[in-house]
Image 1 (cartoon, rainbow, N blue to C red):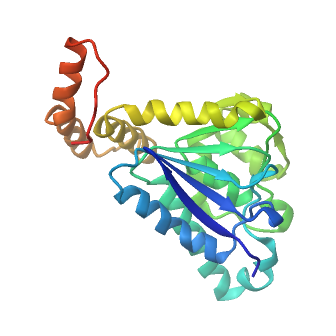
Image 2 (tube, one colour):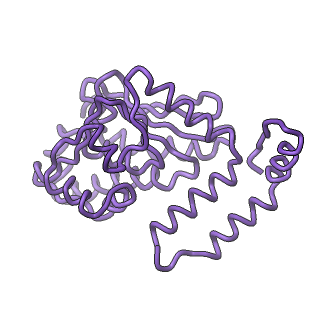
Image 3 (cartoon, rainbow, N blue to C red):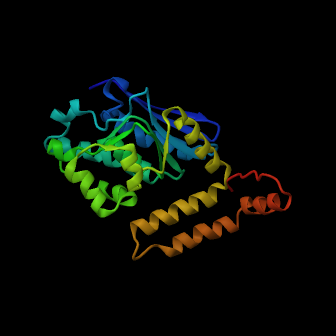
Length: 261
């Protein structure tokens, strides 16, 4: 197994989650896949954290995806199913994180790394980034459970092109497809991402959470969304101390201080 770890660094209301395996382009090994849901759960349980940002260590990659050196043992027979479950648990944790999530992408964003980025709510990328899911080039059938994040950012035809060709898409192509929310010059990526995360973090957490869950529910079940649950989220906002604070701050012409309750 290659070396590598995932670290989490709280910085005020922002939690910076780093894929730290630069010698392998920040590829995720089995231990890292297993750790990711735990790290997200810790961020979710920390009331001071308002936004989670994912990024890669070093200058070359967000993440090259799964560590291919493990494929000989991890992606055959029963081991393949267990490995897929590790992947699925990690993607599911990112996609269902109760806090807003941002992928700060620089360099290579490949395979499982691209899937993690797609599971995030928003994606900011440097102009030199490259995106690819090369499963077809490796003879890997792409798990159907991981298709939904692609379709939340791409059209069906675009998702098919990504999976059928396995080719690398430039940052500009990814932006034109809607895969990336904003393109930044490499030297400005962290500043732009930090500004976005801070802007989100300054807003009322219950209102942001309600918006996130409503959008995700309409994507998950467009023909039969759970409107009762969604209406309850909105009612909770109107019943909250933050709503009273927002109204008071508006009348006093000052910045509101939201508590998430």
